[in-house]
Image (cartoon, rainbow, N blue to C red; front, side):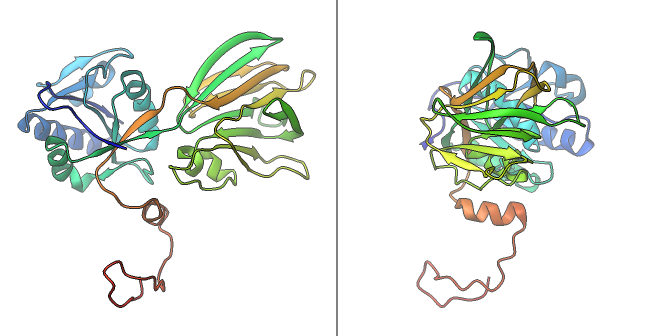
Length: 310
């Protein structure tokens, strides 16, 4: 984990938002005004500029939109942050999420915190941490078809709602099992609280270096979620004489998989950077985001005083 920002450089942030909602537009406008008052320039994406109507903002286009930006500030839920990750990863600019969605697990600030958030950015009072990604490759009959990446997960899914997909799963070059299933999810620790979680996978703390393999509704005796080494290579082969499938990366980018396709996932060579405004432990984030019941807890207080019910 490192602190953000270099002193003396021209400072700019890229604002990425889930437009179409009045409350989001108001939040972005307020943040833009605060950033500009703090001497930090603002960029917005060309496809969002017409709705945002920020006169002082620089309109940018394409995958290099965040090049040179200190941060990519994201307004919306986790889906918007995953879209913004495509810009942040390309430019090595950290993402700073403002939650305007439902759970907003990757967000660092809430709508009410805009003033404090901008002040922390102004004073460079934030930390930057790396989050593992996945590199994904697809081959058919040994011929490379495509490659992609994911921050949360890459999922191999059935293409037809009424039919299962038949796959053989492989770990480190050795076959593990054959499943008829709705799909198989390869996930990072960051993605363990997303799609993999809804499929019954474990929650993995972000600092744990590991890859997850999570079957989705597999019809098999051995079909448990697995946590493997970050050096492992995970693979799924779509059975050649059965139904086709589809590959989704972070639920955003899709590729049709013909029978016989082979999908490999490994630790990504390029991490995504996240900006953190505080030092709250991951446990507290779980409790807050999932509204977990902790009443009755009587753990030791850090100041050495008496414990009381949470």
